[in-house]
Length: 413
Image (cartoon, rainbow, N blue to C red; front, side, top):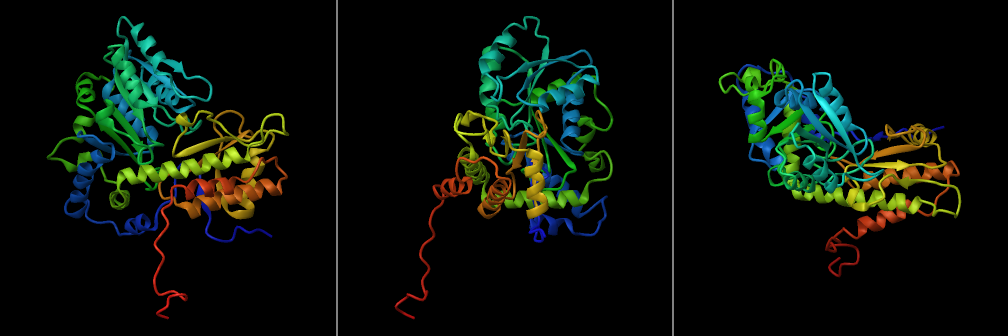
């Protein structure tokens, strides 16, 4: 007997939960792709996307996942033999650089301290040592999806400026856009990379890249440009067919328009704040589950110790003596809850909770309650109730509603 026979809930760090509004928007027949509604929709999305990244500059949309957006960024700005500095806090910045290396780009990795964000002083020091200005770009993930470490992009830009280095700042925001505060222009980011399937609440299939004037200048001399990814070809105002280098992703475009409507209705700053509160509740829960050192077997703990370095969209949890694979399997088979597996170290020693996009307290507390029930069923070590801690964290950010009139105790009844 299992309790999973209800609506399943997938709480992995992408693809995230797709809102019913987005699903309904996608559920339409294929139209004429050469003229009419879809053409207008495409241009309207290109006009709306800059606001999402807080930039005045152009966005490009590709039919791809985040890895495709990585390649679009690399091939449009770099040349064979160029060198990039990779700021690594987990997994994904180096993966981005390894993709570039297959095209002839060289890279050097600057590692952050264990389980922490990049230190800006280390960036300044390394760039100052680059006397020959060999680094053409600095690659960094705002949030590393594997480790759940969050980097301070504004501080990294200040570090680059302090070194007076001309390298492009290229930011992977696949796991953070629409979840974390991000100010492309104010922070001096030159290339921003994102995907549709996380904070933007759309099925996987759209890669997006935002481009600063400095990046566009680099594009003019880049020799890695290919026909499919080429920004120049996709910018031709007289040939909308080439915006996607061929057939447009029609259903995804309708879904993205609906998702942007939902973000606009809530307000982007409010979206960021909601994610901050939800993340704080998860962090409080894991802290409550943790067993103090010396008081028993090691249980769950946050991978990122410093609160300022924690992501608002994904949390990597170290499971200590608890089998992460058994915990995940119990949640899924017995309750219909899917948690993310660890891609950062031993897969049996950690799991990831995605908390991005379409998320509210019932979903979050249900997730945490299910994890706590599974921990209890497995007789796992726990310091206290994570659900109670999370509820308290949410309560502190909740404004009580006014007492409704007309109830049973209303004198008028």
